[in-house]
Length: 190
Image (cartoon, rainbow, N blue to C red; front, side, top):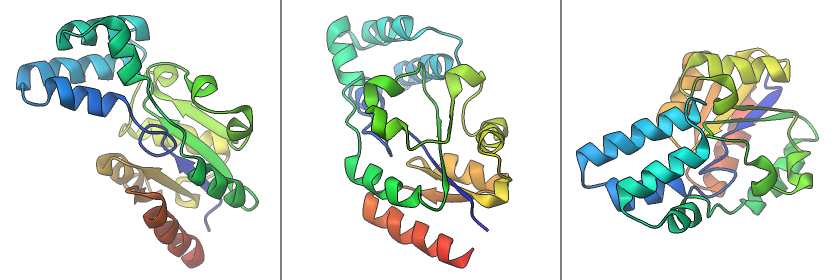
């Protein structure tokens, strides 16, 4: 029986500024793309502070630091999804598991949106990133549920699959309508 629903942040609960930035400036250069990816993993794992990360990727991209900040941090909350989460909250625990280089939650979301979450797990505080099984186990533990009692939603397929690998249900997010359809089906069958 499903008791908890866990959402990824960037690309699901908000738009994702980093991926378009990385594609725009590093997408055609395998060496720069690998270096930027490595920097992103370091910041998400808490091994590199966020300001150093932005400084280094701005240098790699050959863009002004302020411009890099603006592009990477231009995330917009998915309000229609938050409206749906408020309905889900009546019957399920709600969690957030995200690869994040810092605690941006207070800047990304309103206090009312943040109040919907019973627990969060952000990679920079954990010291490891999805799809590391420890990330999924951590959020389940914080929510007080077993992996088989939780659904994880992510816009990156390998992260949804990583949840499935430890026994959670996984939904690969593409848009709100698709999510609602797949999630409602999972919830009805549990």
